Image 1 (cartoon, helix red, strand yellow):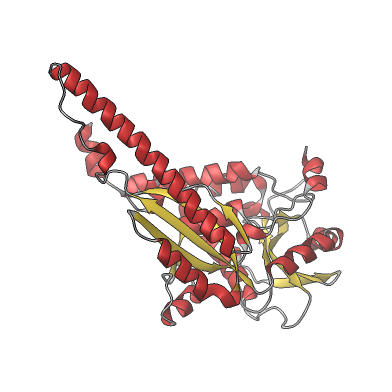
Image 2 (cartoon, rainbow over the protein chains, first blue to last red):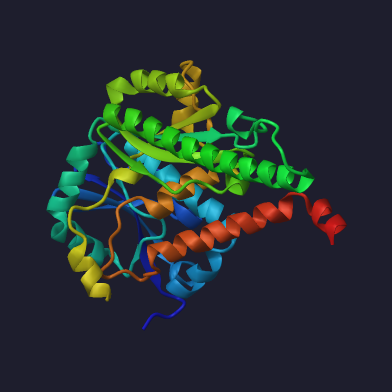
Length: 265
Length: 76
């Protein structure tokens, strides 16, 4: 039974257990001091957090508090970035909190091979985000009015309406095809790729429709080549936005998460 | 909402793209849908999808609050 005075161990990232040691004075979520736990040749970056903030119940509420979420995500990201500057780093999902250090030691030894596999896969590689937008409100040839024909104003209206619907459908279809094409081009350049859900226009802060929200794992020494490929995809009504480099958040799936999932069921 | 991103800033100085600030929404795409997922002895075990839904809802709501409140009022 957890009481509100308890603490938990918050896990940020895992690396191989090699120097340099944990950067001094690094602060994590809620201003807590980041330290490391070593086991089985792996190093976990953690901090001790109060469960009155990071327990399951308080989190359910605070995850809905945008200021708290922004601060916590920023702090988590900062720790990952600092660590990833020096070492291949497997970032861990936001608010992964263990009941104590012993559980983390256990995790490192139990999932040793899986972590090693991930760390090998991402070494000398970086994640880049590519978002593509298309403005569906822009006039296109498909939405131009059809040839004048017979029939009254009602028929003309229906025809216009039908043409406009068809035009919109066609625009959607073209946008989706373009997204596929961009994703394929980038995927063939990248070591691995993944598509995130397209962001709501209210979140992307742009009026245009986001047709692609992709993540691409790219060799570090090919980053400029990749950026050029992205540049070349811009145009024909499509805007493309590049973000990164990110720690490889989107490419850290552990090979086998089955036992963990079964434990929860 | 944006956050400092020193690595992006370094790149920007080199004359290579991305902006030096990270949009919270881009960060959440990764922190809530990516990263190593472990469970087992976790204190917290909210399903991934819940986290995403909660935060996205929060973000949308807060954006709505910031944007166009006058619009809403005149329409009603």
